[in-house]
Amino acid sequence: MCGIVGYIGKSQAAPIILDGLEKLEYRGYDSAGIAVYDGQQINMKKSVGRLKALVELTHGGAMMPGNLGIGHTRWATHGAPTDVNSHPHLNSKETIAVVHNGIIENYIKLRKKLENKGYLFVSETDTEVLAHLLDYYYKGNPLEAITKVMHRVEGSYALGVIFAEHPDRIFAVRKASPLIVGKSDEGCFIASDVPAILKYTRNVYFMENQEVACLKADELTFYSVDEEVIQKEPVTIEWDAKAAEKGGYEHYMLKEMYEQPKVLEETIRKCIIDDDIIIEELKMSEEDFRKISKIYIVACGSSYHAGVTGKYVIENIARVPVEVDLASEFRYRNPIIDENALVIVISQSGETADSLAAMADMHAKGVKVMGIVNVVGSSIARDADYIMYTWAGPEIAVATTKAYSAQLMALYLFAMKLGKAKSVLAQEEFRQMLEDMKLLPQQVEFLLSNQRKIQKFANRYIAAKSIFFIGRGIDYAISLEGSLKLKEISYIHSEAYAAGELKHGTISLIEDGTLVACVSTQEDLYQKTISNMVEVKARGAFVLAVTNEGNYEMQKEADYVIYIPKTNRYFTNTLAIIPLQLFGYYVAVGKGCDVDKPRNLAKSVTVE
Ligand code: AGP
Image (cartoon, protein in one colour):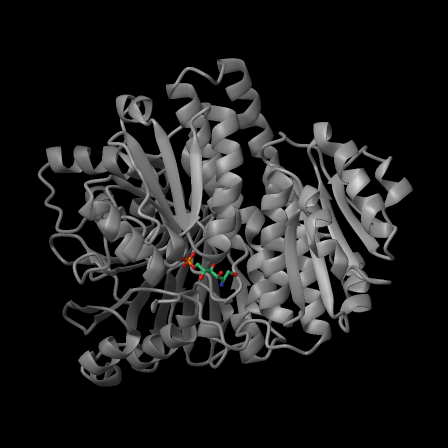
């Protein structure tokens, strides 16, 4: 997510803005910029990379005089991280500057219209369209220009806007992307999040969708999109600064778990348009899809687990054979790959050394590679032949949650598009799957509300020696992820097993009271999985079952049952993972582990 900070008041704006952007660094970004009005003109500085580069470039803001300005840290979505793509963006006359967090969905159409009217664009971003559109509508009244833009633009935005011809005010505009406004004796502030301005004021206004705020040095006015003045009440922020960075959550991991409904919603909003699946950045034609003879999914860790789910989903929906490999293995097994095969590399960071190396090997063999990546402009994203982004935003906690869920969604969408292109997925089934998919965000929201119940259950296992996760088919895939979530942050030994495999050795490890988490969401496998439960219970295990709402037979065998709402059989991993994430998190919290930064682990393993 991008970070926005703006200030107008008695003090010099630049140091306040840079300080605020520093407090938003946790949101993740790849470039930064600032624009300040110095009494004559708008001066702007931008730089790729860490905020430190911008601070040095501007001598901590000292070389940017003026008490009115806006600043931005950019998390690239449209256009790679470069100076010219960084925000703020200016109109050609450099009399309007804008910073933006969100996605302008109709920016291509608007850009074409503006270019036809003679506007010249310098960047690849969707945001630059806003600067020129504001110029187009501006006839002397900044509020009128802003509300006209709001009526024309589709998508999500939090904006900070300054006009050189109105140097006594800043405008803040919000639709879907969070934006707050603050007021103190020093002046008025806008920010994407509380930490940026907590040092200056605890007196904050949370903007609602389609609202505009006009900030003057000592005056705040709010308007509706129809320019009617609206009254808003301030909220006093009680958080301490550190807590504020996590939005009030104790850990980034918990915050990111709770962001999953929004991430799924964002994915659906971006990729399901008029009841069809549009993956704009993929640039893979119907013919390209039809030609795919076989798929190799290559990844590490949780991304590999998403790939295991992808195998079941793609093979069942699109009837295309799929092999899944750990990247570190794939590189050395000298795979036999025909020219119509597609290799899919899944990576949250886009920088994992093993995955990068596997992609390089494939390119050396002339094999096309598609990346499913969360970080725009990352190495895998740049080098892949095809790219499909996940829209999870920056993920700070080492243990992935929201990015993993976004990867599952990407694989469902890809499988459905492939199934349609191969004419093996009927239109009616396709439509029904889209309907099921649209329910996932609220179903995840519901499962997250079980937080307290799962915390209570988890506290019983903080002293456990070993915990096992078992499942069959797609439930085996989610068992892999549930087991990794637990062990990487609680340091408790855990293994995931195909349920039918337990009796071939590992069942010897089951002792009195050993917890076995059993995922069973595939109706045709219920009975098989129940017999596996009976096997482990006979050896003293305590069985936690995660199964579909309505499958009450599970209660006869399992000692503790968590139900997930009904969904399409191929989407159940998206729901089953929620209680398993919460379980792993609360066991780790109960043990007093450093949940966000577990020992020995890095967020991105850039070494082999
Ligand atoms: C997941 O919780 C781990 N942090 C780790 O397994 C991670 O999934 C793996 O290192 C792959 O990272 P990537 O998705 O950035 O390539």
